[in-house]
Image 1 (tube, rainbow, N blue to C red):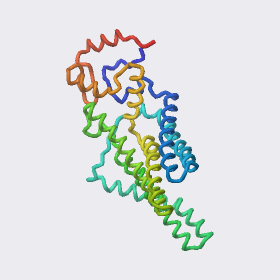
Image 2 (image 1 turned 60 degrees about the horizontal axis):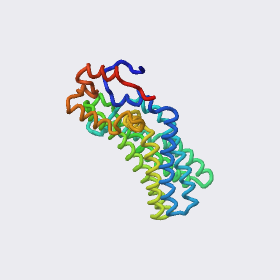
Image 3 (image 1 turned 180 degrees about the vertical axis):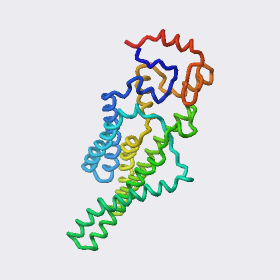
Image 4 (image 1 turned 30 degrees about the vertical axis):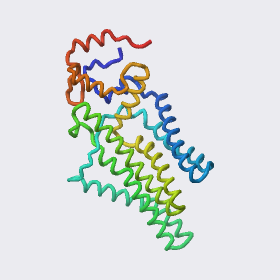
Length: 287
């Protein structure tokens, strides 16, 4: 009764057409991510620095990750699939330009501000040192965190992932790429900083804690193509209600191999329209 009348089955539209990511579902997902990020990071820090430090990290980490997911989760269902185009041929100049612009921005905003304050209090040499450390540090970290994912993100229709399974795999790979990159960059940055300041044990704890939190917050919250994440939420909710198989795409792929469905680009369609019409006419929504 609420369908659009289409015969196309697009995996990335499942969350939107079934209204799987409601405001309540988004808040629940944010709470789940907050608990996972907070407990994971807090436990790692508590093992090295004690219970009090672990509680502080648990609260701040959970708040950071949960807020990022709460703000972005409802957008996932409206986003088309994408893929990570990491080919550097004929594209390296654009990546270098964006990294350079990001570095210049941090050098002459936050870096310059901190440098002026440090120079006013401690002299010119201290101000120059603070300017370079803060500007270069934030410039390099934010550049590696935000620029490569934005550079690599490409709409799926612009590439070669045009079968349903390849389309789905490509968007999943893009999400895992963002998660791994953000976790690695922030984790290594904080790990090295705490290693030099407080020793290897604190460095390792900071690497693991910051990597987990940034992967779950920035890795899941950034970007414009998060259709796979919306698909995960939708399939788990519908499988819990016993309306769909939890591993929906492998199931549809089996139906395609058996001849029940045909693939039209990234879409599935029933091979026989009569079967489609019969199922639609006899469907009884759950009470």
